[in-house]
Image (cartoon, rainbow, N blue to C red; front, side):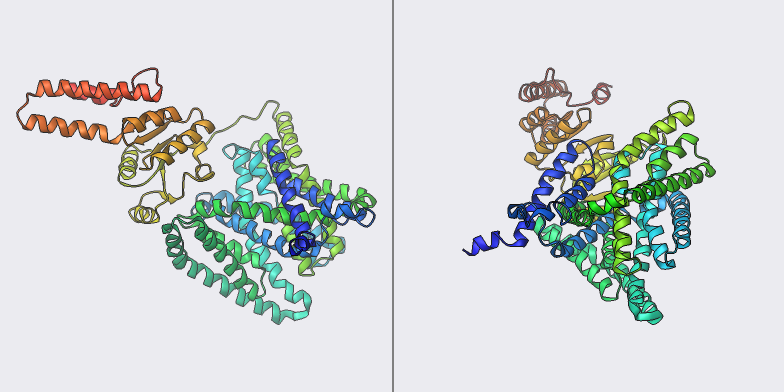
Length: 593
């Protein structure tokens, strides 16, 4: 009976609706390469109180496919926002920002300030209070990182310009959210004293988090990594996010400030890739809940009754953003086609616009009706962003007269080689790549090896390459080659098979234990499989035979014969059409001279 009551509770019913929505929306929209953001908003609109929820009274069975307690989802929606800001922090790092500092802090800051300032002036002229006008202006000036970076190629001129502006917007969320959070008690009547108190204490807590995180997070995650327990690693990640969020919330700031700071701090550690992979499912589901709550707030009757103003507002926002962005890029020397395409691509609002609007509404800087109106405009803008990208390409070709040329990354930026496993073999491979001026990124799931490697100056990150899409997050799609040096035969075989399935042309060089393992790796798709015991055993035999008095000629001949036997064995076990070269042609030629 208790189980039946639990299943019929509103909470359980809503949970089933959300999980069902996630199970349908994510795979369907991913199949057609459309962001699930749009799908979740549409689901919220459909199952919310203004959608099918209107019919529950007449058709009680609809309660199983609608949200019956919208207010009960607010805490999960807030957690989704927290994880979204945390993930943005993880994607940023001080090193990445410094490398792009001129474009990020030059182009990005001008774009946000010009668009935000223009919109603030317009809203203030139309009668909105200055605080509310500023909140609306900054919110609508933001563009969608999640959508734009999936649509465009960041190695192209359009992609690089968009990336720079989006990075600054992500950084600007800190002061924007800081400001809105500080204004919340002021808007509720706390006065200037409350505002100053929040600013002072909030700044102090953020500084404390930055200092404490720098020294406490590396040993915390190192200890979690040593246990080889994914559950403990995930618990440590969520603990850091929640504690940082609670710390900033205690000062009167929004908890998402703490979440963003936590992400930035973890991004500076070697464990950021693993943390990002661990929290991705939770972020996706929690963000889906947030977007569903946004959709639930959209009243289709209100949309219909205000269809004209909504369409006018949507077009006006996008036209203003496109014009300002395009003119700014032209003034900075961009081609006409590049400026036009980038301006149109960045024209729609962002999923983070919804966050800022929610924060502004919670701070009572704007009225609930105003927030709903602009949430509808934002939802509509997000929905048509892919169409804007196609329109931008068409307009760019028309402006240029021909198709705008694709400019790849600078020629001296060689793609890195990915080294999986950073024991003694991985160290040697990294040294050889460095000696020949080739960039690399090494990864290992042993935190002690990672820590020691970074201390010695190697480029190494913590990640379990055999789990999930860790290698994709590390940029394997852009790697020159993948070298597997790990001493884990089963994991190596799985990684080779997955890499070959995803990247048919990727050079994959794998360390094998023996000839049998080499054959297995060749069947899995390795380009080269090098048995570690073979050459060392042959060299030991050669030294021993010569030392005990056997003539050098017969010894070398027998070594070559034995090596050829191994090559024959690997060819048969690996299903190869010809014998593998266990030594390069250059080395064999060197032996003869």
